[in-house]
Length: 234
Image (cartoon, rainbow, N blue to C red; front, side, top):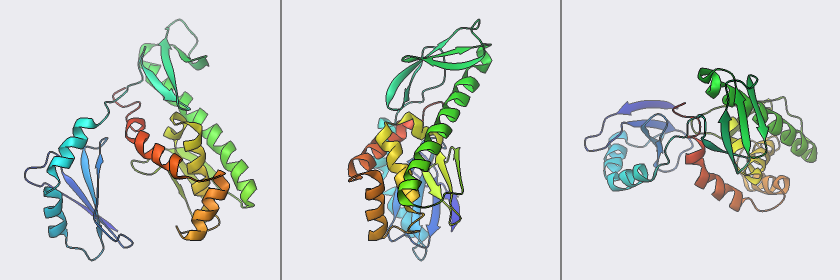
């Protein structure tokens, strides 16, 4: 897999071209965080033809940029999603340092410059706890072992599972409704049974999720761009 970035006349963003051996068609998406157009090209595809095709997608690109959600910084009075519900940040310098949930509010204390870091740490801890617990539950149902569970902030992946059983998630899943988080966990744990996306894998994924995954997958696709903007600009 290789990646190269190009400027295409007439397009508002540079194009990062990535060749993938298992890609069967051209795929284009907008990386709002890095302000890039990400183009996936089959291993033997023509980069020149692919870039020409991207140039023809200008109307779609501009439409998507116009519809893109704005950033939601961690700031006093800002409302961010948490497990699918709104959570309003309330800062008081005199409160004890750190963050704690009080109903539908997240109370944060300490100096203002530490506000964003306190919110970020609290969300990371909540994500790590919930994802670890859900992974353990679903792994037990699947009768498989998981080597480790960690959280990060990958640009495009909600989760990944190594052949050795190390599972890594985006901490942003804690922002999403619980069925979305459970779907991603079921998806990654299912890879402990099948390291592919075969019919057998799909069947295992739905069994571990507890039913059809189409709605949770659709919801993640719909909410994803906004979730990726939470905390930006803090």
